[in-house]
Image (cartoon, rainbow, N blue to C red; front, side):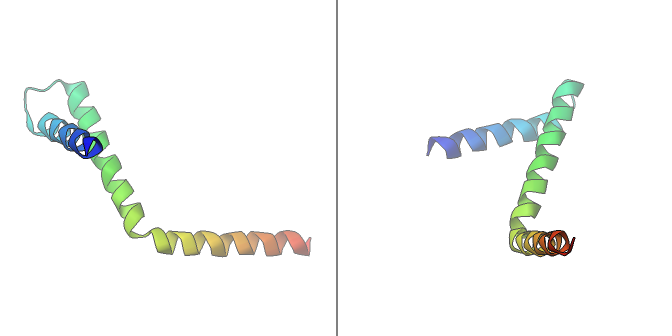
Length: 69
């Protein structure tokens, strides 16, 4: 419960930093980086199965190449 409250509070602060025109430039920059970082995490979570399958295929290819040498 406390994690959910803190997470919600942090994201309200991030959104306020992006929306508020009088926020310092460094705070707006950090807010944008946090927002883009969370979008990247969400995209990775959505495609986790495909990414995992791709990584396993690449690992198998590398193992088969090293056995040939």
